[in-house]
Length: 306
Figure 1 (tube, rainbow, N blue to C red):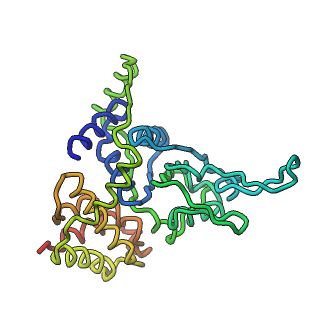
Figure 2: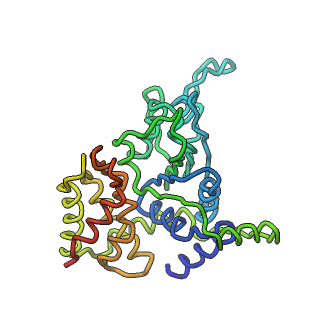
Figure 3: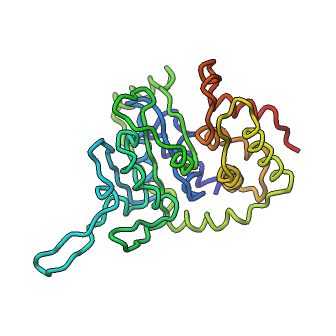
């Protein structure tokens, strides 16, 4: 697995510069049956990131541009009348894929955003009373721009909680910027082949359950989550779904490193990306500059691993 993981990162670098950790986050999410929210300004390759990832895992990919006039049926599909056969037949929407990119998800209305909920949680969609299972693996990669807020609909807390990871995509460093420009000038040929296939992803998911988790790790995870709930600056704390996410993701980290046990470092690696969108800071503390990320960082510094 280490060799495949290394090849995965090296292949992604043909297209993406400085995004090794983010690309790894997507791989971790699909192994954990989770979804990812990418937040960053326009032009930082969020869409390219999703497309590249789909090629590396040899999965079907579809992109939906979320706009204010987008309807739920534009995502899940609808029943249409066939005059030739005098019967209704299903027109499946773009949700019927392995990886769906919900681009600028916060530009669509809450009703349209909620059309993703059943697919994200149950891996199925219901059209006109009939339930249709989705192909596995299935993952939603959603993007949103933190700068532009006019004409947007912030995701409700319940839907944010459905995302396994929230990843902040920042501007590249000066050196990375030079590499990006250099790749365009050289016009080097990119040879993106599949590193993982769908069958390997599904098999790896089963193997995650075999990774040993000690009582100390369970105590560590519970202490982090409980510490956030009891923090005086927190308006609402993480749900048990956060504890499950910490457990599942830490197992994935160990699996990719070919270890059969979880360490505290595995838990901490993605703790910020797992927890920062599952809590809320009280308004009076938010005015003082306290952020959900800083609160999680403080808790991770305070809770000792046994």
